Image (cartoon, rainbow, N blue to C red; front, side, top):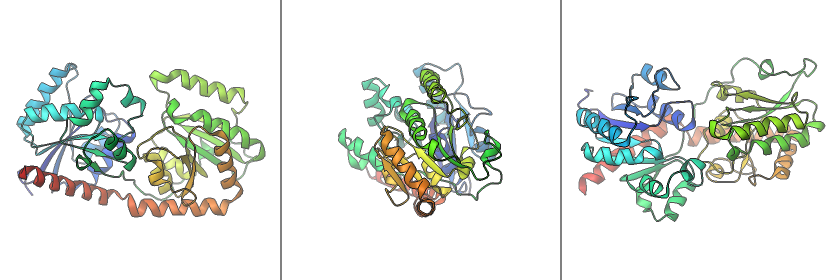
Length: 384
């Protein structure tokens, strides 16, 4: 199929780091039929040799960086307008709520017929709440339609009086692969006398919203009763919450748990390390549809997670995991003991989670749904 016949789509994204939103875009684009679609990714922050940039280019997808000297809004709008008029895409789709206004304004000025936005987190997330109220409103209402990745987010937008017909739900997807070789005990200081250690782990940036301190406090209650148990925290400190990182380190030290709970920092191989966990935990105050929960379920791990935002859409209580009240140490401790004392139940929940992601979160099926939705929207807009 020639370029003239392929559907041209320009995606806008802030960066191509190893974050959850970036991974979802990477997964969808690398599963797209490039004979049907010509995607171009425009990145606001330089991305050469960073994150998913190289992998996208190797997959045959063009990546365009907005020049570093174009920092002001009008400069970026001007760059995008010129690009849109040159490429003539049928669709511009912002993958980040912060970039929705660019898709709307530059898309309109650049004669792009279909201008789409995204919201991939709860409106209670600190990144969204940190925007000025006027920018919040523009980000949610400027595009013709807005994609969300969780029913809970759709409900939040309806509560803000955004028309339901303008909100499009597209689930996240997840890659499924066999358990890799190696052992996490090779990466952390587990004594050789512990022959079959059990690892309870969590993965995510070290923000207060993730409730890492609850994870540590809950583990502190159960570790004395399970000599083979260890805790692992995979994630990097965030520049605007370094005080929280220091709080986490102090909490581990004050509990004398430096030899039982390990801070592993950022790991590109986190999805593979999850295969080494016995139990996966995500105790956030709010989320969209968290990739890391899908990755844990794809690894057939039982999940303990907060009963909030988009998590209950994925984790079904007492079926493929256990839901707890956000911030409740006692409930977390109880859930840990339940799974640790009942290994057959843990295996049963893990297998149920694997069945969930296989049937509902397949990347090829999700990509096909996205492209079908584009076709529907284009036909609908043409009738307007």
